[in-house]
Length: 401
Image (cartoon, rainbow, N blue to C red; front, side, top):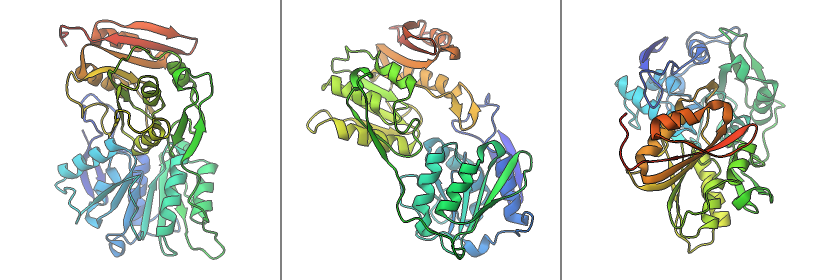
Protein backbone atom coordinates (compact mmCIF):
# COMPACT_ATOMS: atom_id res chain seq x y z
CA UNK A 1 0.00 0.00 0.00
CA UNK A 2 1.26 3.49 -0.85
CA UNK A 3 0.25 6.97 0.25
CA UNK A 4 -0.46 9.70 -2.29
CA UNK A 5 -0.38 13.30 -1.14
CA UNK A 6 -2.46 15.67 -3.30
CA UNK A 7 -3.76 19.24 -2.99
CA UNK A 8 -7.06 17.64 -1.93
CA UNK A 9 -5.68 15.42 0.82
CA UNK A 10 -3.47 12.42 1.51
CA UNK A 11 -4.72 8.91 0.76
CA UNK A 12 -3.66 5.30 1.14
CA UNK A 13 -4.37 3.76 -2.26
CA UNK A 14 -4.14 0.25 -3.65
CA UNK A 15 -4.90 -1.56 -6.85
CA UNK A 16 -7.37 -4.46 -6.93
CA UNK A 17 -7.07 -7.22 -6.01
CA UNK A 18 -4.87 -5.99 -3.19
CA UNK A 19 -1.56 -7.83 -3.05
CA UNK A 20 1.21 -6.76 -0.67
CA UNK A 21 3.75 -8.22 -3.13
CA UNK A 22 2.53 -6.02 -5.98
CA UNK A 23 5.13 -3.35 -6.73
CA UNK A 24 2.80 -1.41 -9.06
CA UNK A 25 1.18 1.68 -7.55
CA UNK A 26 -2.46 2.72 -7.89
CA UNK A 27 -1.46 5.99 -9.54
CA UNK A 28 1.23 7.52 -11.72
CA UNK A 29 2.60 10.93 -12.72
CA UNK A 30 -0.37 11.57 -15.01
CA UNK A 31 -2.82 11.39 -12.09
CA UNK A 32 -0.59 13.68 -10.01
CA UNK A 33 -0.27 16.20 -12.85
CA UNK A 34 -4.03 16.42 -13.34
CA UNK A 35 -4.73 16.87 -9.62
CA UNK A 36 -2.12 19.66 -9.37
CA UNK A 37 -3.66 21.39 -12.38
CA UNK A 38 -7.17 21.23 -10.94
CA UNK A 39 -5.94 22.98 -7.81
CA UNK A 40 -3.46 25.54 -9.17
CA UNK A 41 -3.68 25.61 -12.96
CA UNK A 42 -1.16 24.92 -15.71
CA UNK A 43 0.45 27.51 -17.95
CA UNK A 44 -2.13 30.03 -19.15
CA UNK A 45 -4.98 27.94 -17.78
CA UNK A 46 -6.00 28.62 -14.21
CA UNK A 47 -7.37 26.22 -11.57
CA UNK A 48 -10.71 24.55 -12.21
CA UNK A 49 -13.75 25.69 -10.22
CA UNK A 50 -14.74 22.28 -8.89
CA UNK A 51 -17.01 23.71 -6.20
CA UNK A 52 -19.13 25.45 -8.82
CA UNK A 53 -19.58 22.15 -10.64
CA UNK A 54 -20.42 20.06 -7.57
CA UNK A 55 -22.43 17.01 -8.56
CA UNK A 56 -21.63 17.47 -12.27
CA UNK A 57 -18.02 16.31 -12.38
CA UNK A 58 -17.41 13.18 -14.44
CA UNK A 59 -14.20 11.17 -14.22
CA UNK A 60 -13.72 8.90 -17.22
CA UNK A 61 -11.22 6.03 -17.26
CA UNK A 62 -9.85 6.44 -13.72
CA UNK A 63 -7.37 3.53 -13.44
CA UNK A 64 -7.76 2.48 -9.79
CA UNK A 65 -9.98 5.18 -8.33
CA UNK A 66 -7.18 7.61 -7.54
CA UNK A 67 -8.84 10.64 -9.15
CA UNK A 68 -12.28 9.75 -7.83
CA UNK A 69 -11.00 9.31 -4.27
CA UNK A 70 -9.01 12.55 -4.27
CA UNK A 71 -12.02 14.49 -5.61
CA UNK A 72 -14.68 12.71 -3.54
CA UNK A 73 -15.71 15.81 -1.60
CA UNK A 74 -16.82 17.31 -4.94
CA UNK A 75 -19.21 14.39 -5.52
CA UNK A 76 -17.83 13.14 -8.86
CA UNK A 77 -19.31 10.49 -11.10
CA UNK A 78 -16.84 7.82 -12.17
CA UNK A 79 -17.30 5.95 -15.46
CA UNK A 80 -15.16 2.85 -15.92
CA UNK A 81 -15.09 -0.25 -18.10
CA UNK A 82 -13.29 -2.30 -15.46
CA UNK A 83 -14.92 -4.18 -12.60
CA UNK A 84 -11.49 -4.27 -10.95
CA UNK A 85 -11.25 -0.48 -11.11
CA UNK A 86 -14.73 -0.24 -9.64
CA UNK A 87 -13.74 -2.54 -6.76
CA UNK A 88 -10.47 -0.67 -6.20
CA UNK A 89 -12.34 2.64 -6.12
CA UNK A 90 -14.83 1.38 -3.55
CA UNK A 91 -12.00 0.00 -1.38
CA UNK A 92 -9.94 3.20 -1.61
CA UNK A 93 -12.97 5.34 -0.77
CA UNK A 94 -13.80 3.14 2.22
CA UNK A 95 -10.21 3.30 3.41
CA UNK A 96 -10.40 7.08 3.24
CA UNK A 97 -13.59 7.02 5.29
CA UNK A 98 -15.65 8.33 2.40
CA UNK A 99 -17.78 5.40 1.29
CA UNK A 100 -19.76 5.15 -1.94
CA UNK A 101 -23.08 6.63 -0.88
CA UNK A 102 -24.91 8.30 -3.76
CA UNK A 103 -24.64 11.63 -1.97
CA UNK A 104 -20.85 11.38 -2.24
CA UNK A 105 -19.68 9.46 -5.30
CA UNK A 106 -21.54 7.80 -8.15
CA UNK A 107 -19.94 4.76 -9.79
CA UNK A 108 -21.09 4.01 -13.34
CA UNK A 109 -19.91 1.48 -15.90
CA UNK A 110 -19.18 1.98 -19.60
CA UNK A 111 -22.54 0.35 -20.32
CA UNK A 112 -24.59 2.68 -18.09
CA UNK A 113 -26.32 5.84 -19.32
CA UNK A 114 -24.02 8.83 -18.65
CA UNK A 115 -24.96 11.79 -16.44
CA UNK A 116 -27.48 14.16 -18.01
CA UNK A 117 -25.19 17.19 -17.62
CA UNK A 118 -21.42 17.35 -17.33
CA UNK A 119 -19.76 20.59 -16.20
CA UNK A 120 -16.25 19.16 -15.71
CA UNK A 121 -15.03 16.15 -17.68
CA UNK A 122 -11.75 14.57 -16.56
CA UNK A 123 -10.40 11.90 -18.88
CA UNK A 124 -7.68 9.41 -18.05
CA UNK A 125 -6.63 8.36 -21.57
CA UNK A 126 -7.12 4.59 -21.95
CA UNK A 127 -4.84 2.17 -23.73
CA UNK A 128 -7.58 1.51 -26.29
CA UNK A 129 -8.17 4.37 -28.74
CA UNK A 130 -11.44 2.68 -29.75
CA UNK A 131 -12.73 2.77 -26.16
CA UNK A 132 -11.85 6.46 -25.92
CA UNK A 133 -13.70 7.15 -29.17
CA UNK A 134 -16.80 5.28 -28.04
CA UNK A 135 -16.90 6.97 -24.65
CA UNK A 136 -16.40 10.47 -26.07
CA UNK A 137 -19.25 9.89 -28.52
CA UNK A 138 -21.47 8.74 -25.64
CA UNK A 139 -20.58 11.76 -23.49
CA UNK A 140 -20.61 14.43 -26.21
CA UNK A 141 -24.39 15.14 -25.97
CA UNK A 142 -23.99 15.78 -22.23
CA UNK A 143 -21.26 18.42 -22.34
CA UNK A 144 -21.96 22.07 -23.17
CA UNK A 145 -20.13 25.22 -24.19
CA UNK A 146 -19.03 25.87 -20.61
CA UNK A 147 -17.81 22.35 -19.84
CA UNK A 148 -14.19 22.14 -18.74
CA UNK A 149 -12.54 19.12 -20.40
CA UNK A 150 -9.10 18.02 -19.19
CA UNK A 151 -7.44 14.76 -20.15
CA UNK A 152 -4.31 13.22 -18.75
CA UNK A 153 -1.91 10.43 -19.60
CA UNK A 154 1.74 9.54 -19.85
CA UNK A 155 3.48 10.95 -22.92
CA UNK A 156 3.68 7.47 -24.48
CA UNK A 157 -0.13 7.16 -24.17
CA UNK A 158 -1.03 10.42 -25.92
CA UNK A 159 -0.63 10.43 -29.69
CA UNK A 160 -1.73 12.65 -32.55
CA UNK A 161 -4.62 10.25 -33.09
CA UNK A 162 -5.69 10.77 -29.46
CA UNK A 163 -5.86 14.53 -29.90
CA UNK A 164 -7.72 14.16 -33.19
CA UNK A 165 -10.46 12.20 -31.43
CA UNK A 166 -10.99 14.94 -28.85
CA UNK A 167 -10.96 17.52 -31.65
CA UNK A 168 -13.39 15.61 -33.87
CA UNK A 169 -15.89 14.67 -31.18
CA UNK A 170 -15.75 17.50 -28.61
CA UNK A 171 -13.90 20.53 -29.94
CA UNK A 172 -10.53 22.30 -30.36
CA UNK A 173 -7.78 20.53 -28.44
CA UNK A 174 -4.32 21.45 -27.16
CA UNK A 175 -1.76 19.78 -24.92
CA UNK A 176 0.36 20.98 -22.03
CA UNK A 177 4.08 20.77 -21.62
CA UNK A 178 5.26 17.43 -20.29
CA UNK A 179 6.05 16.94 -16.60
CA UNK A 180 7.61 13.72 -15.31
CA UNK A 181 6.76 12.15 -18.69
CA UNK A 182 3.08 13.03 -18.24
CA UNK A 183 0.96 15.43 -20.26
CA UNK A 184 -2.44 17.12 -20.03
CA UNK A 185 -5.03 17.56 -22.78
CA UNK A 186 -7.23 20.66 -22.92
CA UNK A 187 -10.38 20.53 -25.01
CA UNK A 188 -12.90 23.35 -25.51
CA UNK A 189 -16.41 22.18 -26.43
CA UNK A 190 -18.78 24.69 -28.01
CA UNK A 191 -16.03 26.91 -29.43
CA UNK A 192 -17.45 28.98 -32.33
CA UNK A 193 -16.84 27.10 -35.56
CA UNK A 194 -16.41 23.76 -33.82
CA UNK A 195 -18.40 20.89 -35.29
CA UNK A 196 -20.25 18.39 -33.13
CA UNK A 197 -20.61 14.71 -34.06
CA UNK A 198 -23.66 13.86 -36.13
CA UNK A 199 -23.62 10.13 -35.33
CA UNK A 200 -23.31 7.89 -32.29
CA UNK A 201 -20.00 6.44 -33.47
CA UNK A 202 -19.22 3.18 -35.23
CA UNK A 203 -19.52 0.75 -32.31
CA UNK A 204 -20.21 -2.11 -31.94
CA UNK A 205 -18.59 -3.80 -34.95
CA UNK A 206 -19.66 -7.20 -36.32
CA UNK A 207 -17.74 -9.64 -38.52
CA UNK A 208 -18.01 -13.26 -39.61
CA UNK A 209 -15.28 -15.74 -38.68
CA UNK A 210 -13.63 -17.31 -41.71
CA UNK A 211 -13.23 -21.01 -42.41
CA UNK A 212 -9.80 -21.34 -40.81
CA UNK A 213 -10.97 -21.08 -37.20
CA UNK A 214 -11.96 -24.57 -36.15
CA UNK A 215 -15.32 -24.84 -34.42
CA UNK A 216 -15.80 -21.05 -34.62
CA UNK A 217 -15.86 -21.00 -38.43
CA UNK A 218 -18.88 -19.10 -39.71
CA UNK A 219 -19.82 -17.53 -36.38
CA UNK A 220 -20.87 -13.88 -36.21
CA UNK A 221 -18.77 -11.94 -33.70
CA UNK A 222 -19.87 -8.68 -32.04
CA UNK A 223 -17.25 -6.34 -30.63
CA UNK A 224 -17.99 -3.32 -28.50
CA UNK A 225 -15.25 -0.71 -28.33
CA UNK A 226 -12.13 -1.61 -26.38
CA UNK A 227 -12.11 -5.32 -27.16
CA UNK A 228 -8.80 -6.55 -28.53
CA UNK A 229 -8.72 -7.06 -32.31
CA UNK A 230 -12.13 -5.55 -33.02
CA UNK A 231 -12.60 -6.43 -36.70
CA UNK A 232 -11.02 -9.89 -36.95
CA UNK A 233 -9.78 -12.82 -34.89
CA UNK A 234 -6.42 -12.26 -33.27
CA UNK A 235 -3.87 -14.93 -34.14
CA UNK A 236 -3.69 -16.37 -30.61
CA UNK A 237 -7.45 -16.90 -30.37
CA UNK A 238 -7.50 -18.39 -33.86
CA UNK A 239 -4.84 -20.92 -32.86
CA UNK A 240 -6.79 -21.70 -29.68
CA UNK A 241 -10.02 -22.26 -31.61
CA UNK A 242 -8.22 -24.66 -33.93
CA UNK A 243 -7.20 -26.76 -30.92
CA UNK A 244 -10.14 -26.61 -28.49
CA UNK A 245 -11.22 -29.81 -26.71
CA UNK A 246 -14.12 -31.46 -28.54
CA UNK A 247 -15.30 -33.91 -25.86
CA UNK A 248 -17.13 -31.45 -23.60
CA UNK A 249 -20.26 -33.70 -23.53
CA UNK A 250 -22.52 -31.39 -21.51
CA UNK A 251 -19.73 -30.13 -19.25
CA UNK A 252 -19.81 -26.85 -17.36
CA UNK A 253 -17.31 -24.73 -19.29
CA UNK A 254 -15.92 -21.31 -18.38
CA UNK A 255 -14.68 -18.85 -21.00
CA UNK A 256 -12.35 -16.96 -18.65
CA UNK A 257 -11.39 -13.47 -19.81
CA UNK A 258 -13.98 -14.02 -22.51
CA UNK A 259 -13.49 -10.85 -24.56
CA UNK A 260 -16.08 -11.01 -27.34
CA UNK A 261 -17.09 -14.53 -26.28
CA UNK A 262 -16.13 -16.32 -29.49
CA UNK A 263 -14.43 -19.21 -27.62
CA UNK A 264 -17.36 -19.97 -25.33
CA UNK A 265 -19.84 -19.52 -28.18
CA UNK A 266 -17.85 -21.97 -30.32
CA UNK A 267 -18.09 -24.53 -27.49
CA UNK A 268 -21.85 -24.04 -27.22
CA UNK A 269 -22.31 -24.26 -31.00
CA UNK A 270 -20.41 -27.56 -31.05
CA UNK A 271 -22.04 -29.01 -27.91
CA UNK A 272 -25.67 -27.88 -27.35
CA UNK A 273 -25.67 -29.57 -23.93
CA UNK A 274 -22.66 -27.66 -22.60
CA UNK A 275 -23.27 -25.17 -19.79
CA UNK A 276 -21.13 -22.17 -20.73
CA UNK A 277 -20.10 -19.39 -18.35
CA UNK A 278 -18.61 -16.18 -19.74
CA UNK A 279 -16.60 -13.96 -17.42
CA UNK A 280 -14.41 -10.88 -17.87
CA UNK A 281 -13.44 -7.81 -15.86
CA UNK A 282 -14.58 -5.57 -18.75
CA UNK A 283 -18.21 -4.48 -19.04
CA UNK A 284 -17.67 -3.92 -22.76
CA UNK A 285 -16.32 -7.45 -23.14
CA UNK A 286 -19.22 -9.15 -21.39
CA UNK A 287 -21.71 -7.06 -23.40
CA UNK A 288 -19.89 -8.24 -26.55
CA UNK A 289 -19.94 -11.87 -25.41
CA UNK A 290 -23.65 -11.71 -24.68
CA UNK A 291 -24.40 -10.32 -28.15
CA UNK A 292 -22.05 -12.79 -29.88
CA UNK A 293 -23.81 -15.64 -28.10
CA UNK A 294 -27.28 -14.40 -29.02
CA UNK A 295 -26.24 -13.91 -32.65
CA UNK A 296 -25.22 -17.56 -33.03
CA UNK A 297 -27.08 -19.75 -30.53
CA UNK A 298 -30.76 -20.30 -31.18
CA UNK A 299 -33.29 -19.91 -28.42
CA UNK A 300 -34.23 -23.04 -26.54
CA UNK A 301 -30.68 -24.20 -25.86
CA UNK A 302 -29.29 -24.17 -22.34
CA UNK A 303 -28.96 -20.58 -21.11
CA UNK A 304 -25.42 -19.30 -20.70
CA UNK A 305 -24.17 -17.30 -17.70
CA UNK A 306 -22.49 -13.90 -18.04
CA UNK A 307 -20.45 -12.32 -15.23
CA UNK A 308 -18.41 -9.12 -14.95
CA UNK A 309 -15.87 -9.41 -12.17
CA UNK A 310 -12.59 -10.72 -10.85
CA UNK A 311 -11.92 -13.82 -12.94
CA UNK A 312 -13.99 -16.73 -11.60
CA UNK A 313 -14.05 -15.48 -8.01
CA UNK A 314 -17.87 -15.40 -8.16
CA UNK A 315 -18.12 -19.16 -8.89
CA UNK A 316 -18.34 -21.88 -6.23
CA UNK A 317 -15.37 -24.16 -5.55
CA UNK A 318 -15.34 -27.47 -7.46
CA UNK A 319 -18.23 -26.42 -9.70
CA UNK A 320 -16.60 -26.39 -13.15
CA UNK A 321 -15.40 -29.10 -15.53
CA UNK A 322 -13.36 -27.06 -17.99
CA UNK A 323 -11.80 -23.57 -18.04
CA UNK A 324 -10.66 -22.04 -21.33
CA UNK A 325 -8.56 -18.87 -21.35
CA UNK A 326 -6.35 -16.60 -23.42
CA UNK A 327 -4.90 -14.76 -20.40
CA UNK A 328 -3.67 -11.16 -20.65
CA UNK A 329 -0.10 -10.19 -19.87
CA UNK A 330 -0.71 -6.43 -19.50
CA UNK A 331 -2.32 -4.35 -16.79
CA UNK A 332 -2.98 -1.06 -18.58
CA UNK A 333 0.51 -0.14 -19.87
CA UNK A 334 2.44 -2.40 -17.47
CA UNK A 335 3.62 -5.82 -18.64
CA UNK A 336 2.94 -8.38 -15.90
CA UNK A 337 2.02 -12.04 -15.48
CA UNK A 338 0.25 -11.34 -12.17
CA UNK A 339 -3.23 -11.36 -13.71
CA UNK A 340 -2.67 -14.63 -15.54
CA UNK A 341 -1.23 -16.36 -12.46
CA UNK A 342 -4.22 -15.23 -10.41
CA UNK A 343 -6.53 -16.61 -13.10
CA UNK A 344 -4.73 -19.97 -12.97
CA UNK A 345 -5.04 -20.17 -9.17
CA UNK A 346 -8.71 -19.22 -9.31
CA UNK A 347 -9.31 -21.83 -12.01
CA UNK A 348 -7.80 -24.59 -9.91
CA UNK A 349 -10.10 -23.65 -7.05
CA UNK A 350 -13.34 -23.79 -9.09
CA UNK A 351 -12.44 -26.91 -11.09
CA UNK A 352 -13.78 -30.27 -9.97
CA UNK A 353 -11.23 -33.06 -9.39
CA UNK A 354 -10.27 -34.20 -12.87
CA UNK A 355 -11.33 -30.85 -14.34
CA UNK A 356 -9.05 -29.18 -16.85
CA UNK A 357 -7.61 -25.74 -17.55
CA UNK A 358 -6.71 -25.04 -21.18
CA UNK A 359 -4.86 -21.85 -22.11
CA UNK A 360 -3.28 -20.30 -25.17
CA UNK A 361 -0.33 -17.99 -24.66
CA UNK A 362 2.80 -16.61 -26.20
CA UNK A 363 5.33 -19.38 -25.65
CA UNK A 364 7.90 -16.97 -24.19
CA UNK A 365 5.65 -16.42 -21.14
CA UNK A 366 6.71 -19.82 -19.79
CA UNK A 367 3.33 -20.56 -18.21
CA UNK A 368 4.00 -24.31 -18.24
CA UNK A 369 6.28 -23.92 -15.21
CA UNK A 370 3.59 -22.07 -13.27
CA UNK A 371 0.97 -24.67 -14.17
CA UNK A 372 3.22 -27.52 -13.05
CA UNK A 373 3.82 -25.78 -9.74
CA UNK A 374 0.11 -25.16 -9.21
CA UNK A 375 -1.50 -28.28 -10.69
CA UNK A 376 1.39 -30.73 -10.54
CA UNK A 377 1.20 -31.24 -14.30
CA UNK A 378 1.18 -29.40 -17.62
CA UNK A 379 0.85 -30.80 -21.13
CA UNK A 380 1.53 -29.12 -24.47
CA UNK A 381 -1.58 -29.71 -26.59
CA UNK A 382 -0.40 -27.77 -29.64
CA UNK A 383 2.41 -25.41 -30.52
CA UNK A 384 3.66 -23.19 -33.29
CA UNK A 385 6.53 -20.70 -33.43
CA UNK A 386 4.74 -17.97 -31.44
CA UNK A 387 1.91 -19.64 -29.49
CA UNK A 388 1.35 -22.71 -27.38
CA UNK A 389 -1.82 -24.36 -26.09
CA UNK A 390 -1.34 -25.87 -22.61
CA UNK A 391 -3.52 -28.22 -20.59
CA UNK A 392 -3.43 -28.78 -16.82
CA UNK A 393 -5.61 -31.25 -14.89
CA UNK A 394 -6.77 -30.79 -11.31
CA UNK A 395 -5.68 -33.85 -9.39
CA UNK A 396 -7.99 -35.71 -7.06
CA UNK A 397 -5.79 -35.01 -4.07
CA UNK A 398 -5.17 -31.38 -3.09
CA UNK A 399 -1.62 -30.21 -3.61
CA UNK A 400 0.28 -28.66 -0.71
CA UNK A 401 0.57 -24.93 -1.42
